[in-house]
Image (cartoon, rainbow, N blue to C red; front, side, top):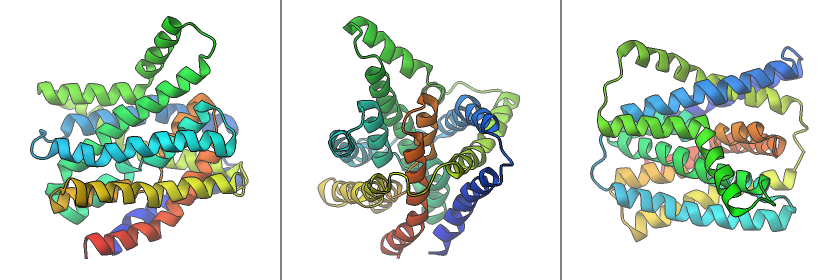
Length: 311
């Protein structure tokens, strides 16, 4: 219980610090935009590249782990996509961001340190695989759907080029794919270059969370209350429940791997969803509010889950 509090409270406090800076007008709008650009083009790509490059070699129940996590993840993604369009009468692009929010956990900033603290080295491989899968597959899927929605009216060839180009230009997706390629080929990275990447990676979490809080400062917290409740419920309750059914009863993963999968699914919405929304200037206010609320509520729900899984 103390472990999750020790990790989640600093995370939430950093968002609040950005919120306070925005409310007191210490940060101008242009400054926040510049910080977002730094996060999207430099810090987050460095974080994913380094983590995927340094991930341990895949072995064991990898296929079962990915099936237990991503089969319910895909089902929830497309259900949320269709339901979001109908309930809130929004575009496919905005509904894609909702679907990503329902399935994309904060596996990097909270998930990795939390699972390693609770389960040690045995949790490293499944945790990193989920980080890699979320970044390459889920983020890539949402990016493709947003690009497709923005390219309506084009012929199929032009639309395909637009989608592929949008995914290929996403520095977060490219960095994770590059890190995976370096990992699989065992290409050595020079220490100075790795040190440079680590410096940028260390800035990703604080800068992304601070920018999120600063953006929240300019938006009323009651904006989209129904949507915030909807996304928080999907992320903190429905997502982990579906993964738990697959991991524990359908595929019967080893205890540690099952616990890691369920815990990762139960985490609050990732800040990367906000970064993507900000990048496309699409639904960013409501997504940022949902991240803020899911993080606050998640302190309690994750504590309860850990007491069940770890106790």
